[in-house]
Length: 128
Image (cartoon, rainbow, N blue to C red):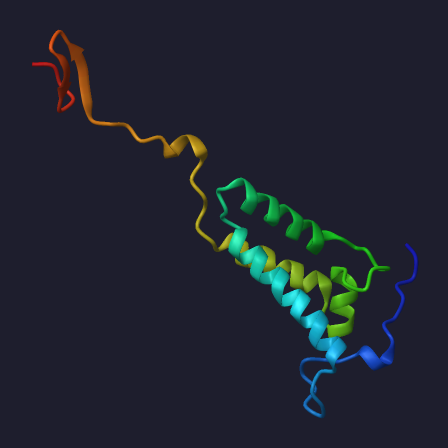
């Protein structure tokens, strides 16, 4: 595994530091991470094609170990002083606590209609 390049010292900011506010570059990468977390949370239970696609893209971003692109997940964690594995673990734990989606076949609604008769359908679910 290649050595991970260190972010420039001018970009380092740790959320616990009180001696200064985050610099613009730090605020930018924090905004990228916050947006990804919002997308993950919003689309975790998506039941439409667009939502599922956005969730897959967001999950792929979090799972990536890309180091060269400055807006990839791991470099962003490095800039913010966060442990990427801990963030991933936290997202998995959060997701596990969310209500499960219904299976597509369980969304079928059955109308309470009876069997057909010569006069038409008999309501109420039973034949006279």
